[in-house]
Each structure stands twice: as C-alpha cells, then as structure tokens.
Amino acid sequence: MSNSLFDLPDPLHGEDGARPETAAGSSHRARSRAPLAVRMRPRSLDEVVGQKHLLRTGSPLRALVGGRTGPAAPSSVILWGPPGTGKTTIAQVIARGQDTSFVELSAVTAGVKDVRRVMDEALTARDLHGRTTVLFLDEIHRFTKAQQDALLPGVENGWVTLVAATTENPSFSVVSPLLSRSLMLTLQPLTREDIGGLLDRAVVDPRGLDGAVALSPEARDHLLDVAAGDARKALTSLEAAAGVTLSHGDHSSASGVARDHEDGADGEARTADPATVTLEHAEEAVNRAAVRYDKQGDQHYDVVSAFIKSIRGSDVDAAMHYLARMIEAGEDPRFIARRLVISASEDIGMADPTALQTAVAAAQAVQLIGMPEGRIPLAQAVAHLATAPKSNASYLAVDAAITDVRAGRAGAVPPHLRDAHYPGAGQLGHGRGYVYAHDAPNAVAAQQYPPDELVGRDYYTPTPYGHEKQVSRRLEILRDMVRGPGRGSAR
Image 1: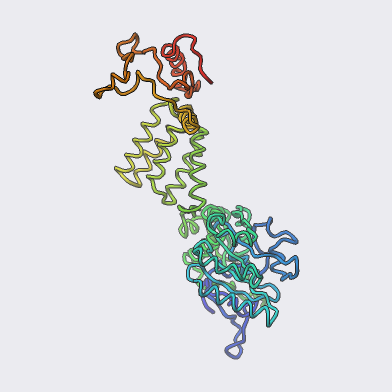
Image 2: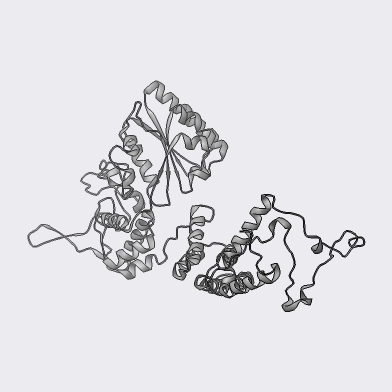
C-alpha cells in the first residue's frame, strides 16, 4: 500500500475511483495525485457551497445544467466574482449537463482563430447532431475587443451558450454588445460557514482526505482565517496542514484515502485513530492570510474608497484596517500618500490646517525612506486625519466659484486692481484709487475686490468645528471691514 497522503482516486475512472485490475488478486484502488481542491470540485449544483441566490429552483444556472431548450432556454452567462467563489466549478458542473458539448478556452492562451474554430464546430454540432455547445471562457477580461467581438456571431445566433468567468467588473472589461447578449451573474464571497462546511466535508469525503486526519477546532479556525473566503485557498491550506501533521508523527502507514486497519480480537478489521491537525500544524503549513486585492480592478477602487470614507467619517480603526490591506496587497505607497494629501484638504481643510502639513510630510517621507518603513509615517498621517475635526468648506468654496465662472459670471476686473506697472497703464485708469492694505488700519483695506456682478457673493462658509470655528468669527469681521458695514452678501 502506498504511504502518500496524496495518493487518491483517479476521477477519470468512475465516481468511486475504481478501474480494471492490473494484476490478479489486486485489491488496491488506483490513486491520483490531483490536488485536493480539484478532487473536491462539486459534481452537481447541489454540492456547490454558497451562491444560493443563483442556485434556486428555476434559475438560469439550473436551466443550463438541465439542458433546457426552446423559447425559454437560458442565454449566455457571465460569471463575475472574486477568486475561489466557484466560477470554474459552476462551469464544470454545466459541462455535465444533458446533451451538451463542452469546450473550454482560456483567454490567456486562446486567440481569435481558436474562437472562430469553436464557433464553426458548434454550428456543425447543432445542425448535424442537434447538440448544444457550451463554451467556457475563463478570464474573459483578458480578451481584447477584437477577440470578444469574434464571440458575437455565435452568441447572438445561438451556436454556443457562452459561460464566461471574470474577476473584473464586466461593465468595464467586456464589450457592450457581448454584455447586452449575456446574463451577468454576480458571485458573492463565500461566508465563513460556507468554507467551514467545505473543510469538514473534505476531511471525511472519500474524494478528499477520507478521514486520514482529524481537524482540531483551533486549526479549523486558523484555516478559515487564512482562506479569507477563498474555497480553493482553504482546501489547499487544509491539504498542506494534513501533510505537515502526517510528517510530524509516526503515521507512515496512513494513506490519503484509507486508514490503516488492525485485526481486533474478534478478527474484524478495526480502524486506527486518525492523526489530528493541530493549530501548530496549520500555522506551520500556512501563516499568511490571502488578501483579496487587484491593483487594477474593483478591489483597488473599493478598498481605497472605504479608506477615504473611513477617514472622513472619523473612524481611525477602520481607516487603519484599509491602510493595512493596501500595504499587504502591495499597493503603491505613493498612491496612498497622494490620497491622504487630497483628503487633508478635501475633508479637513481649515478645521485643522496642520493636517495638510502632516499628509505632505508623510508623502515626502515615503519617497525618502521607502517601504516597509514608509508604513509608519503613513499610519501617523492616517491617525491625524481620521481624528481631526472635519470641514469641506474650502473645497465647496472653490467648486462654487468654478460653477459661477463656467456659467459666465466672470466680469471685468475692477480698474483699481488691474496691473499698473507698465507705461500707459495709468492713462487707462489702472490702479487708480487702489488702497495698499498695509497702509490701512489693521492692514485691512475697505474697497471692492470682486467683479461688479459678484459683489457680496459668499463662497467660503466656515464650519463651527476645530480651528475653523475661530476663522468663522474672524471672517465675519473681515467681510464687514472690506465691504463696509451693512453690505450684505449676494447669497
């Protein structure tokens, strides 16, 4: 008997893994070295974990698997979701559907020629044999526009039922004509309960570890933590942890699919106790959690959006979490620093003028010292910005001024403010009557500064928070001094 944990039934030779005996009297089943995640791939929709919103009775996926035809036959589908949520698994289940031919292409290696060949073969299969072709296209977002356009005739005319998978938002990565001809199904990240059930099943399932090991609650929790909702990651980690467990103990007689049997006193076979995967074994196998993050995709924008909104909402702990996620995923620290500089002015502004100084200093520090030490000034800036009083008054002020300018409210500059340094400017009246502010009481000169049509127009409205509370009273005094007492605003 083989002693390898990874000697497992060959899925190509029947559901029980059996195939014809190769030697007389042989009682050993054939083994396969396929990874645990492959061996545990569901054979029906009922075995798929999670995605209950897509697997209800009468759903398009159920119809695809059932091979329903006619006017109500399902259209092509695009499966969108993060890694490890079951996109390829669902496609493989569809491949087992009734009276269908299954063709799989990868956008990484396939080209327009391959797509057209599949279309021609699908048309022949439909016209001559009455068979529907299901085309599974993995990572469709990697296809160019021309390659995606090559799919259109077959999809539109029903030569193929396209099942495409992508981790990127199809609204941005799939051409509009193909998107409009397909049903987009969004796969949700698997819950902790979903992954836990999958681990429990893999430990005892004959296709999995078949009871070769037992999983301690602490090790189970650790595997769930590091999986981060990725079923493939969870199964891969379980397989590694089981290998560590068997290598640490005297379990050389343990098989990956069958436990040792000892003869009991009654002559019956007795099953030996399985080795237990402990927390130490699980941590030795994998000690770093998977981070869902795509620096060019939705995760990039979603996480940084949550990061800035957490700072704006004064939740320093959430902001630190998102900062850590970006750092661990390898996000460019200069990008993070730029976002902090923007946040310092957009969300804090004059409520705490030192916030911008801190953000700029953090950006400069990151440039100077690099990573991983750059995380420290970034964290300091996040703490400052998140806990600072908030005001978007200056941000709103400039936007309101821009709105007026774009609407044509940009009259002539008052003559006394115009440039008067060149010869002849005086004859034009430029600078005549201008009052030098430093010569006026309190260094504030009462005179008109805006164009005529904007006299009294207020753009900046300080908030009552932080430093801006002091600015608010000062501004009221300054406006009275500049415009003259009783000169109200135009707002």
